[in-house]
Image (cartoon, rainbow, N blue to C red):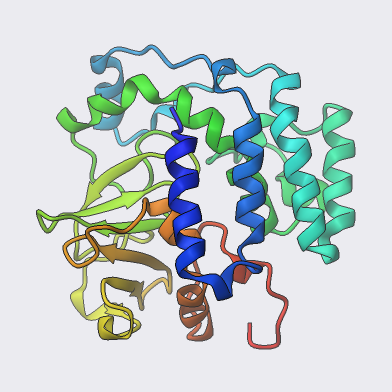
Length: 289
């Protein structure tokens, strides 16, 4: 279950360290406020056995490929409605598309399944609403994290005994949003959609699974901000921010460190790389992008 008290304490500490970012990071503060108001007891935890989970992982399938959280529409709207309002406040250009999404939601034309990874059946949310893929990502991550975090709670421990070598999240199938280098030297990827974490090969792109070392680069020298890094793939042009926990042992969680470092996203974006999950650079309508 999402530990909001810890997350909020980490966030407040980061804002105290990066006071110049406080205004630009206000959207994430608003998201945390939203999550704090939602009752996590409304989530029914997935109760599959270790074998049921392992069988899917061995076939390369995320758990969400074969299930969906049973959340009543009213409870779901307690997250989606306010998240739409947050996005309207920061992205005026897509306000009309967001309102159209809300209308279609009320009419039953769009549903929870269309916000989940791998929802490739029928028309996409972009086609139906006119929303950009970036805004769909913001809407999904801001609305669904408290739900999916609790839904997969009981299944988390089973991953340690199962084999999973994919770049996508083993729980929800979402794209990784951040990377941690652990004390052991292992690389651990983090999913911000459901809170999942899994180890992944260090010399491999999690997006295209390219393992050619000549294509895998670091976009900034670590001495510029010790412990933080940007990993990028020249083959698919995807990138992932990360932190070396051996150097930054007192750093916050992957979610907080990712949200609090938009300047690193700007470095990658300016060099022509893309990221698969929501970032403030996606909301910045500048000539540089």
